[in-house]
Length: 396
Ligand code: SAH
Ligand code: SF4
Image (cartoon, rainbow, N blue to C red):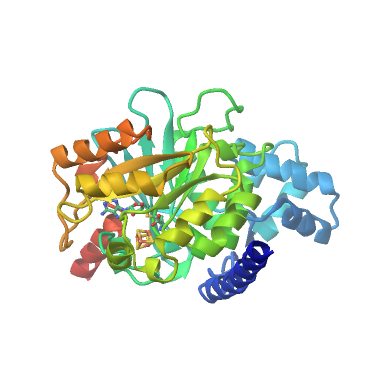
């Protein structure tokens, strides 16, 4: 069957591409999670790795289970307060391990309730994390970063102007959510189904998560573990600029919601504003979306579309978008472009955004317009970090 042959050829190609992507990610690996005094950070270890550490200490497997509970259910960082563990064992643990947190370099609160942190890691690298509360309910999403900088250089994105420094480790990725929880005092982990302020995660901060897949996957598995933080995969959305070969793996292994940064309906324009399109053009990207495991009406794929004045916001483009995604369980998030100093675009007019949304809505696609949040605290992704570096340089 020619169809099947072609399919396996595509899969083989994807396999080679995946190997190449993972090898490149390893070249930007984070520094080891060990302090200068040799103590190891327990945050970010998988359950199996934690069990192996305990085994090496001559401890039984239940010790790992106990620690997991203290780390991820109770949010405890001090071994001396882990009162189900006997004193001598607490001391033994404290000699060898720490329960780490990223350091808060800055924290800013916006008038609209958005809270933004610049977190600093042991090697002094910094990333941004944002908490965006829901307007009408006691819940909200934490937007987490996955890389320091980004290898891709989408024309409208401020992070895209910063070269990739390195990937974040699993501890640093899960650490952003944990530190956000510390900030709101939301410990112990609320039971699934009970209200939580920090109810969702969007992997939409700095960096391309599918170019740091192993660390992102490890971190999300920790977050989803029901004996710890216990956030279900339905409350997690991962955004990609379209790293096609890794999308299937993400769906099968993690089953989290998928958001795809589409932003253009022709390869000509997308090649320019999302340069990764030259490698994985729109047709390949949409094919990967159509086969994304778990996509259904209850679990629609989100297409993100940044509204750039006079660039991608015409009615004809809205109609073409409807044609491209027809038959797919999808919704479209329209994101008014968030300008930054020196950015080459303007935000679409409100009329253009509403006309665009109407065409999508009329075709049966929910197309919420994202409200600009945290304008007063530089919420455009990547901006806070640059601003802090600029100030530091001035100070030096
Ligand atoms: N690298 C991933 C996730 C991080 S970017 C990705 O590209 O999907 C998260 C979202 O913010 C993307 O949809 C991106 O296109 C959008 N974005 C980046 N800069 C923006 C800006 N200045 N204004 C509005 N949206 C922006
Ligand atoms: Fe990287 Fe996403 Fe920004 Fe593109 S939009 S440069 S992929 S962070």
